[in-house]
Image (cartoon, rainbow, N blue to C red):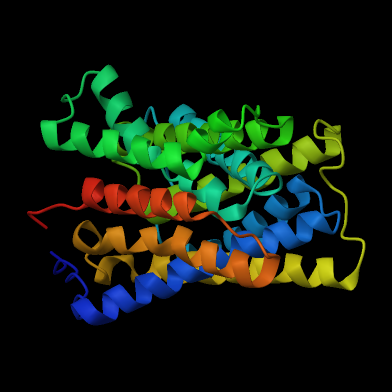
Length: 307
């Protein structure tokens, strides 16, 4: 019998944390680049099509290089299709939010998916959230109240503009879609090898964006940038996402994700700083405090003491 393949050695904790922080910054830069590209007339579908296409090619190369078996276990095909469509929906909703509201705000709302996932798991027969989890969920929601500047809007007797309301709603839809995707991954596709699952998911995202673009379902969805700056932003978007996704995918076995995954929640912070420097998007002091509460709550909610 062939000897079992040894698990790769874990990176030292400091190296893993630094790498995850750099990857989070790359994902943040991807969203900032997306906003610049959208402001230059780039279509949402085109951005997702380019991003998913490049990442799909890289991941396909990795899967073939590792000689991963491509067969799907019985009963997983429809769940794999649904997973891909959910990730496509999440991408479209989040980019649509990024195009309408400050990028950091969109990511903070979109990063509430752990709350949705915990409640979804409970609703579908899983364990109820513990008292600690429920407290942290309440803390995150309180932080969102300040991030969205609800007190300020109420005091000024101003209703949210249609673009602002739609942007927040789309960001929350992205959180819901991603939570559903995670539930399917854990409960319906656990038997499917991770590399193959990720590759097929990106293929479905790419194909669904291509079909949507060809059918004209999203007006202007395939519009090209109107200037060289837009093309550069689109290229940066693809490069940052493709690089970060590929490095994360290859490095996951060595990163001790159960313990170190909360580091990825620096993404909204990096987005806030980049949005301030590159887009002149500034949040108020109350919104910054709310953002700190949200990030802290999500880190505590996703941290495992036994990791």
